[in-house]
Amino acid sequence: MTATLDRPTPSAPTPPDPRQSRHRRSITPPVGGRIGSTALWTYAIIALIPLLLMVWNSFRTNRDLVTNPLGAPFPPNASSYRTAWTDGSMAQYFVNSVIITVGAVLLSTVVATMASYALARSRSKVIRVIEGLFLSGLMMPIHLAILPIFYLFDSLGLINSLFGLVLLYGASGVPFSIFVLSTFFRQLPAELEEAAQIDGANAWQTFVKIMLPLVRPAVVTVAVFRFVPIWNDFLFPLVLLRDSDKYPLPVGLTSFFAENSANYSAIFAGLVITTLPLIVLFLLATKQIVAGLTAGMSK
Image: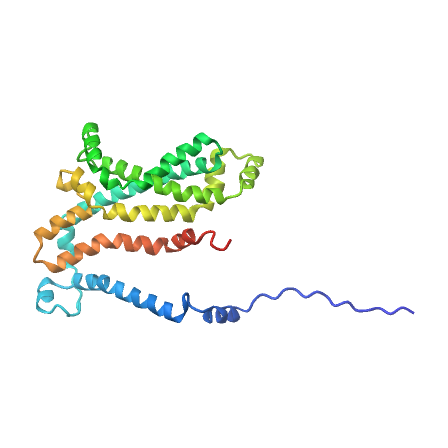
């Protein structure tokens, strides 16, 4: 007589309860503790107050702003934006800023991404020297070289040229971009390239379809960090441009202030037009920026 034992059948893993996940997230302690979190939120609110006042006052009429400085923008009035956009030539300044900034960021990012991949994958001593030359550009403040840059632009016929500013900003951003991107490329395993070669991919396909998507957060971070100083730069456009219709927003804004010194609502509208692209950029790229800045912290 044989006895049979019923073996317990392995049970399938049960998915986590969404309510428990939400509960765990809700009890996660804040970063820096409660005191640190309170301090950060207090700082964020204080930092946002000038921005909110700028937007708030841009939707009021100038008469209402003068007679009642602390009043509310009800009903909202957008006539100051029409004054700034058309009468103040902010539309032309805005287009010039977009051409200069987008062109320079694209140029420096494309050049630095391809150069960083080549520098990170090569073990040649000559390439190490070339990388050192690129990175030496980080140690030189570019604004100290404004006089040689002026004479160079004058000899090349690039004075009063938007294309010249695109080349200047694009070249000046390459050292920082290579410094960041080459570090990310070195963290990627070489086995990925070997697997791509076995599958028949050439070097360009391996770079574009395999390696580049893996460093996308770093590329976005570099692009955003280059976008902000170029958009806000005042010195080089003031020195290298002659015609007012080629001014970008920071330089054009000074002319607009001089022409509308008593029209406070139009000045606030001009400031909003200048600041709004940066706010939209950070809102759209926040996730990629955080991923790029925190990559490798968990290793």
